[in-house]
Amino acid sequence: MIERELYEAKARGDWPGYMDALARAELFLPQPRAQIDADPSAARFHPSANNTLAVYTRGMLPAPDAHTVYLRQSLAWFANAWDPRDPAHLAVNPGSPVEAYLTTSPADLARWRAHWDAAPSWGLAPGAVHALHTGGPLHGPVARGLAVGAHLAVSNGEFWNALAYHGDGYTRERARLREMWDVTDAAGWFDLLQRMLEAEVVSPVWEFALRLRRVLASDFAGPVDVEHWRHAAEAGLRRSAEQAAQPRLTPDGVTVAQPRPTAEVEGEIAGVRRLIGRITRYEQRFRADGLLPEDGWVRSVTAWDYGRASQMARWGVATRYCTVQDAERAVLRAGEQAVRTYGSWAEFSAGYALARCLHFDGEEFGSWYASSLATHLTLTTDPASPFLNIPWR
Image 1 (cartoon, rainbow, N blue to C red):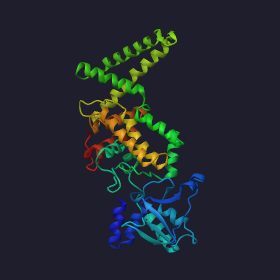
Image 2 (cartoon, rainbow, N blue to C red; image 1 turned 180 degrees about the vertical axis):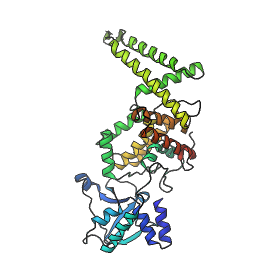
Image 3 (spheres, rainbow, N blue to C red; image 1 turned 90 degrees about the vertical axis):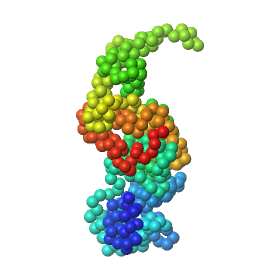
């Protein structure tokens, strides 16, 4: 972690090394929430009484509150934004063991830029497991619920166990929810979260096909032939269409439903038959690449909703659409829902990966497939992974 590097460099008096680490760190600038809500494009310096400007690295951020938000910036941004009228010192993680008060002369700012230019990377590396060892649960039900969202945390380069979550900063997190989910207020966030927790966002057609195979596997106590699966799906869809057209007794009397157009029913059947083929081919590739065992198959794709619900709870904290306590309740529920559906972390992860591939990859086995596979393998093999350190039940 960057904070450990900062601490060790400070302890040995290695200030160039401290600045090297700081140049690779995301720096979060506190702002009054009311000001940012009124003008999201403006980041202002608000010096303390001793004429210093406080910033925090990702692992040292204060707990979220209703009135203060944080904007993510780089050391280079501060070097370029600084003005002679600005505070005399930049206070990095004030009040902590890694605090430093950096002077802000023109020569200092030039050194900040030089360290930034030499930095090989910035922020947490995507594709790796990152955890808070102070300030985030590592064991227990809350940690399990947070780990249900670890696919997104690993692929995005975030702490998997951050419940008091700031993400990429207040304005970026609000933009993420607006652009990706069309969520612009607390009510919209809450509605989407509840639908995810009930697995109502993931495609019901995918889940219909997989649920049918589970029933067939239970009935026949063994593997399900693909053609048998297709025939059963077709029979079920035809039966459903026929039943929907039957007269029904309601409080208003007998209701006669109009039969669905034949073309519509046949199109639905053809689509499910194609879907079963897609699922089968993905599972074959999963087995070849180690995402499934040799005789394994995917039970359900609701993992995608439960995993996204765990992360959506945290996004609600970052955007101030909910409190940390609200997010904790949602995270606990996401973990409970996942455990009810799956038998292990590996099963859960395979279900998440399949849904993601069905939605994004289109059987190209391209970057979406590769990233899903890589994240699954990281979470199921890295000794630091929550999947290897938190019991499923």
